[in-house]
Image 1 (cartoon, one colour):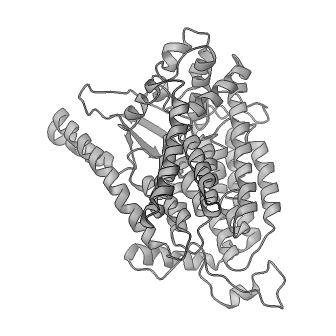
Image 2 (cartoon, helix red, strand yellow):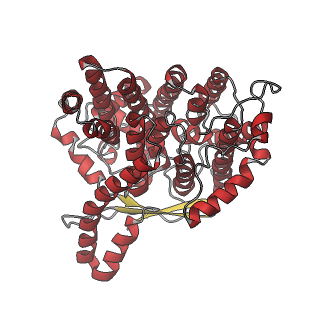
Length: 516
């Protein structure tokens, strides 16, 4: 991000001097070097100096986008929320108006994107709001959101169901919600789960299961209470990360705009109640320690944070790879070994309570693929050409190619960011963003690690791409997990490389999903 000076005649926070000296916004970057970049840069130049970049306009649009999302949550149950009542009923349900609910949510997603872009452009042009006020305002919004029904995903219902299974003495890694809840007084939990996840065991780490267990133990037979507790914890962690960034970032304003006051990820992480918030929290703790603390104890703390993050969700390995990369390039073998050792010991300790059965579901999850991933087309092509045999061949090819594509793309992203930026932040971001782009199974809330890492990386052109990808995934996949129209079936072929495919096809005002 190009720094701009504020003229003495301008008051702090004004945009006068910045408008007189043309400065590229944070969504712009270096001159375009391709047709797509040129088109995007032209559009961005028009918008970045329009009224959208005025702070009041940008904040208003952001607030309106969040308000529309909250209205969707307050009108639950509907096609974009869990099929449960909100904690406090203030608006009538939109259960029988799926088009209205979808339009409200999609419009909110688009407005959140425009509002974020406007705030970042205003910041690059001299706007310097007090980040403490941004955190306080966001805290109020989050406090309201966590009391509403989760929007855009049914994942929170699955968290609650796995917690209920664990609280009743079951093992969520070997028992599906359908197998357990229908025979152990858990019908309300079962009915809240997304259609295609009722027969799926948990793929989350032991630490996540303990959190879910605690919430379900308090909630008892009330799925609403259990979900509410999980939402409160998620919101508290989100604001906690914002406070950490406020205290430790070189540019607190920019870090706050990218996380705590970012309407795009507020909608995805807080309104959706996703565990990815907790993974991002552990990730940024590990990154900040790696930047500031050295020595044996510093390395041990980094390894501990990575291990805890992996105990929540396996995607934390992206942070581990990102932190190891610059160390290996500097030939710091001993530091790398210490961090890896502590992380492995932590993960082994967490998984020891459940054994290897807790690891097995991860291999099944690796067989999932969904649109808009390009790998879906490769698998479909294999099936059309060779039937089941072609399907298995395509699955094998995908298993081999996508990790290679991840490494190549991470390297390209790493090289695209200026070499004077801290590598302990750039590398985790490169891995996290590359994974978002090439993974066969992807959702908007998976971008949490990339966003939290990007808060510490100034002057880069990746902001525009991460924003667009996040909003595109949000528009593509947002739903309450309840299929509209045709029911869904899941087919799991018996071939060794069978891969479950869920094609999420966006139609105006509704979501249809099929397992192919």
